Image (tube, rainbow over the protein chains, first blue to last red):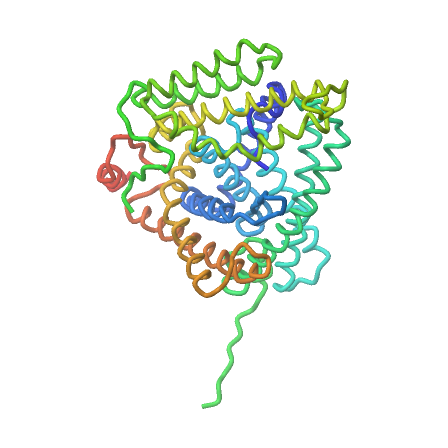
Length: 228
Length: 240
């Protein structure tokens, strides 16, 4: 899903770069409120975790493989702004050190894989939490649905960018249907893995999951006496 | 767990390209690839010149060409996509080897393949000739927000620790007859990833405490690429 150099024309790449820079600028300030002066080491370690999680390739069929995008996962685990920042840092490192994703397409990739998935994922997650019963058990399913929605939305935004600045004379409608169809499938995988990972963390350390924190704080300390 | 990890893509050397300041190399890379992307793909004669520039830089850096070529497999999925474009693109058709292909699609596929390839080659050249710490110094000189560079430096510092942790988990899953890539074993994989997240997060908390113990007040002392871990400790240990 990493967009390479030359896929979108130069003006579109520069424009998405400006949007990405602005979003990262906002995220830098907001992440401070999510993590205070622990931001640098914690976001760095979470970024390393997102990178590691992306390394696992799943066979998608026809000889190709896909991997976790992790935007919604990071947003639920550490909050939307820190999550956005972590995925953006992962993309910068991949572009600069591993030639994965074009250097001029970095802005496009940050917008699609970082900004869109993290923010859409988090908005969907919060919306679901508002309607679902306030129990810790609902965090993982809500995260799964958020992840499922975030992937096709990213594909939709990509199709829009392609319609504006695409360099191949392929019908925009065709691109949209192909991208949406394909990414609904990818979204299912993303949803299952995200839901299971969030569920696993919630089961052991619910206090670490940003999306579960309001529910954990609401629990009261119980003092029980045990018969001797 | 030394302070400076040599990166997998780094090719050690002492050429002029290796020694050039990192911020200039990053600016050159971005400017060059932007120029390539902005060049109309019908200007066929210009692209061999671009290729000559990249290959010339690789040769000047004394990085073996085969080394770069082998690492270019990363763009294969994209080349497959470029090869599909002539089949699905619209416009007048033409016969090539008995296949009906779209003419503008062929031109577009050429453009995608050549620009993508030049971008990957140029990026690999930067990665091959620049140590990660130098890239971070370069980004700092380019006035990237200090917090962003700090997050990147922590990520790079612990990347090998975290990925090795995951590698060991996957090995032990496989030794128990579990295939992490198969959807059947996703629950087990997800629990491992959950544990990896908790371990990474807690490591971050410990790193933060260790920094506080050395006098961290919210900003890191800037060390140069040649600076050692001792100077970091000393600079932050003097209680600013």
